[in-house]
Length: 366
Image 1 (cartoon, rainbow, N blue to C red):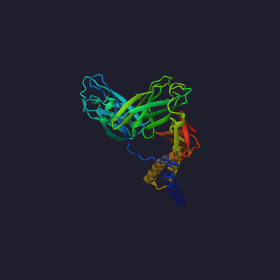
Image 2: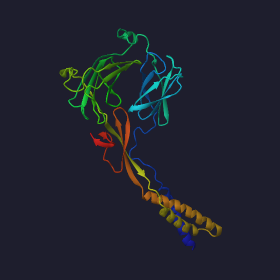
Image 3: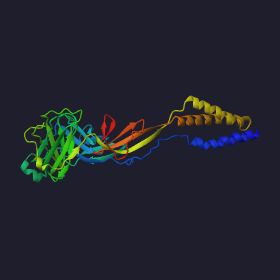
Image 4: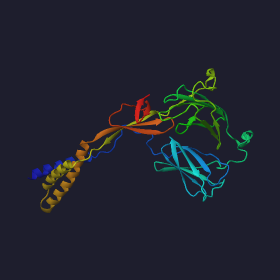
């Protein structure tokens, strides 16, 4: 009997290291290169200046920064805060309508907060919310450091359906930021500066766009806390008058693809299976039997109870480990910095660096 007890005790001791290894935790085959929690950033903060501050006046704000965040504004003298909506990745917009109880003045400070992953960054509006004297005088651009648009052109398309491209070109103040908004499309997009003072890019029409041939298109150029807006005077359909630049002198152009991305990580996640009552009960029985062979009297009873409890836990973990399964997560990054995680039940076969397009939550090789 003593030999049997020693044998059973040795078996329990030998099994303890194995039990400690059955607890499963998510594992990753490849760490996300940007997995560290980084503080969010605010790249730009603008307001459409108004002439007067009175009840009913609308203050339109734009904020540019880390995508996927929660952006709010606080205006000194306002009775409430403003929450900005993310209209496109990294672009937040909102309108504050001045109420009768607001006490907003031209010198009121405006503070923006952008929260991402429980971390917050703050930016103070650098420009006044009230348009200063002489802002509308085009002859006073130099004195007021006002950015300007000298020319706004488009190379249209024969078809304004999804997948077709519109090429926009803006000439104006160098070193500025130029954004274009098309009636019938969502959000805004930016034109990169391909030469000093020349901004050009392609817009690929999306499936949800409803762009008419005579849709209003506006270009906004921002620099030094000031902005100017120009309206396109050409149709978007090819064949309209004035199709932009001379074909023999086309500038370099940056392609703007709204759903193009690059695979940044392929993660493998170990998903634990739930231990059933069968595994728990079986473990409790085995553990109780082992405990019953140790000691005598009240000591044997305590060992039996402890063995049953420990066996139940071990049985549950063993069954959970046996039922574990793997799933895959592909992390992609868009050209504007936004990221998206696409889950897969099986290995999708993508590698880091692959160029892809995202269509309705499915990755397609580019």
